[in-house]
Each structure stands twice: as structure tokens, then as C-alpha cells.
Image (cartoon, rainbow, N blue to C red; front, side, top):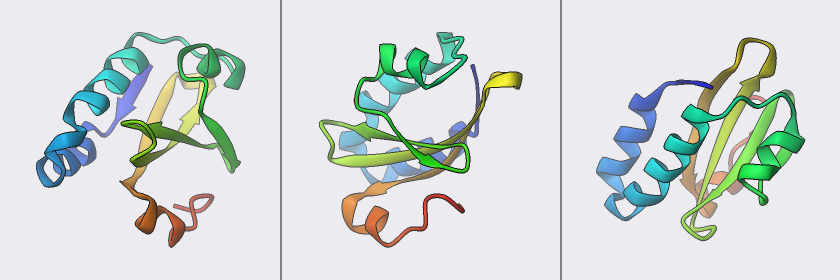
Length: 97
């Protein structure tokens, strides 16, 4: 899959260095993946949730952080839309970011 944009992840890692290992793990798995549906995603990340409007939520670092991405399976592209802790996630309209 093509991941757009790693810059958002890098900025988050700079603010939350303890997320680095988990986010790089996620990034490396996704970059090598060829997902066609949520079933394929769940084979790599069992805790992923579909929240509507092509948005998927991943638990990062033992559910310490939430990563919201928009996935277009037909063009094999993952757009990073949000990364944050639960406090910020709960205040975010993840279907529309």
C-alpha cells in the first residue's frame, strides 16, 4: 500500500517519542500489504475498526494512541488522517477528517 503522508506520523513521533516503535511497525506492515478489504486488514491488525466514510481506526502501542486512516483499496492508497491519544480522538469527528 502507498501511505500518504508519513510526515504526519513523523511529527507525532517527535511529540510522542514513545510511539516511534509502534508507528514504525504499523508503517512497515502497511507498506508491504496489498489489502483488498477490511478482512485483509484484520489479518494484519485484528483490532482495526471501520468507522464509516472509508475511515479505519488502528490501536497503536497497546491502545495508547489511535490512528485514523482513509483507505482506497482500488488504488492501494492509505491516507493518514489523524493520530493522537484517546482524549483527542474522543473529540474528533473521525468520519469526516
